[in-house]
Length: 175
Image (cartoon, rainbow, N blue to C red; front, side, top):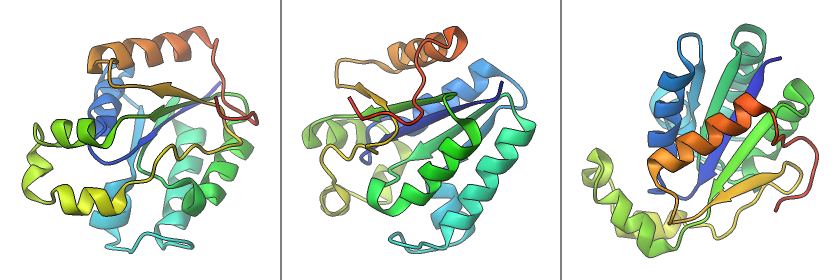
């Protein structure tokens, strides 16, 4: 059965690093869908309700479902804007969704941001503007990752969940 991993959280959380590592760990034909690349780089679209990125992200989810054993969707993905995408995910993947939310203090995201190449593209002012506290999806259960979870720990946890099939999101309340 095809599986979907969703990794969400505020800017600077470490989502992209974990997603890229997971793609390598799961191996060839693992589809990695980075929201930033689709919305900002491919479409140069604004974020918000009915963003032009929604149809393309939905099509990529469909492609992943049909062609990949594992699909990884990663991004800030504000729950209020991307709810239709999450509904599509549930319709496609059902209970084979493994969702994770980085619940970090703002100061921790700033600290992590300083270690990345993107630190020169934007800074604290933009990150404060984008900040959205505890933005859980609500109808897909998400495990929270806090500041004590290292990159390696997050990768191991997610791999274990996906390979063991113990944790499945589906239509449940957020933790």
